[in-house]
Image 1 (tube, each protein chain N blue to C red):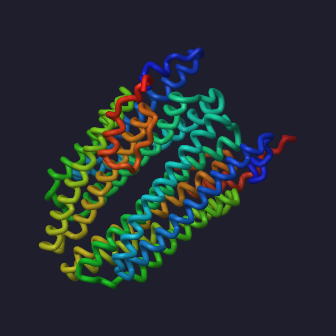
Image 2 (image 1 turned 45 degrees about the vertical axis):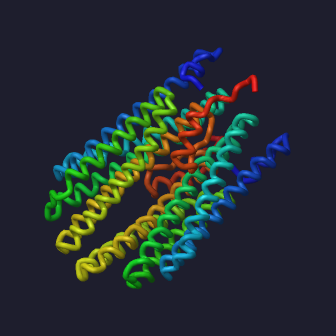
Image 3 (image 1 turned 120 degrees about the vertical axis):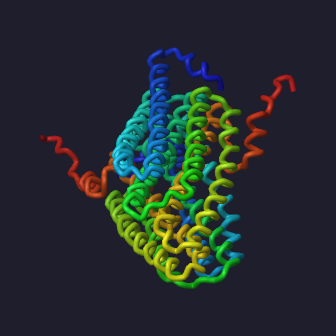
Length: 244
Length: 244
């Protein structure tokens, strides 16, 4: 399916509705990216005020999800979309669930930042935490970009990036555990940091989910749970030759 | 909406399709409950073989999700459901996503059980871990039961139960942290246990999500993100009096 395909409706009103939903998903995604950025900034700089703002802003993301969900349900009822249009609505319904949960993870990081700001301060490992956060935020950005451009190959690249993030998370976990064992007084704050990097790792998983919906949207193939190599083969596969 | 409502279709074939999807969601739910039970049993008894079986069985749950998802998409295309039928399909699409993620959390607990079985053994806190697991498994069971019986009040009770689970989780977290601080050699296994109880706490969240879809299905009202008391008011609200 090409992005231009769903513009070919007899009803220009239907076109406008699909385009509207699509652009609001991207707007919701932009807000979620900002939440990750701000939550991490609050964590690294132990900024309780910024962290509280992130927590409050999560409510608005929840409301956006509900509104888009309601609009999708209206489109299903009134327009009874088929083929590529239905896949678009389906991908939107799934994508906003993941975006909302990314928002939840960002809010959790913000709550940990508030907890940490109140404890004995630890600035150890913050560079690596920042790096992990940048990586998963880029994954979210690239997944939404793949959605906007309907680019299945870019979506596969996002899924592949999740492997790197998982490896980095595991390595940082081991460092944090060693650090705790060496100085038992750090257990409290380090557990908070462990929950933050866990939240970041999950944000990466959600970005990968979104990437999988993009492949479904573009190729009409469900590539969840099949592993990255099989996913890549599905995306790169030639369309069947009609002459064969 | 009453359960009998969606049985009143002109097409008995359509009835059969909806009933089939509904019963497969319940079957998927039953498998997921078993996964929680077995993963926790493997954890508490440090049974690596059982844990490996849980991990393997997660693949089948993923496949069931994809099949139900595909069937819902077919129903949307061919039947173009409206009103209560559309809400049912919508609730199913959302519910199976949460069930699949509960399956993922159970698989994580199983992986921790394998990791713990290979480490210095710790049997501390296992009674409380078992108790927490029982609670969230009951939540999943009750949420599915509310779905099967289309019982919005039972769904509210599930959402309320999530508050108890969160409190219990927090209390157990504090105990585990104190335990680590008192004996630094326990850090490795205790972190595994912390991730297990975190997975259980998330299973409770997913059960609550399913309960919210049940309220949406039965009452046509979206009660996500509004808090338990507002949710209860929505469910107990009298339908508007036509004479008013």
